Image 1 (spheres, rainbow, N blue to C red):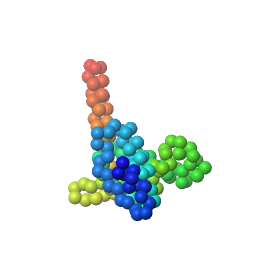
Image 2: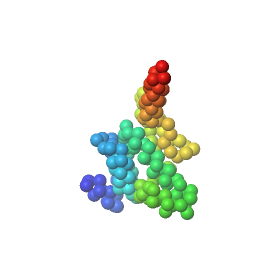
Image 3: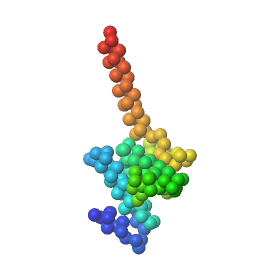
Image 4: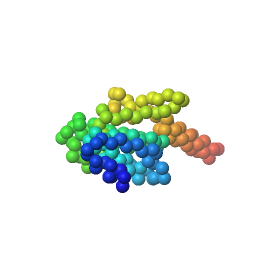
Length: 146
């Protein structure tokens, strides 16, 4: 309710800082919440800062960034894009930054070429787990053939 109230204040720009909005939420709820936060907290001159450990949040941010890019680069397709991703949630890559804090340093995760979140440790961890799972399947199949 507070965010709803503050986001309506058009007299003064607001800065919203949300720490780990993904806590205790299923991935689909995280996506819905992120859409709502972007819509409500980035109107006008307002800005939104989110801290997260969620690969789902990062992945969904890429979707919101890419929706903006597709509609911007192909205005004739903007309505089709809006049917897939709500227009109010699109993020202009020129107004977006994403950083990883690690080992006492800060690194940008946004690809300058693509305007999307690039390779990051959270995605790598998921990939490592998937690779290990694939290797276990191979081991299991090899043992079953003997």
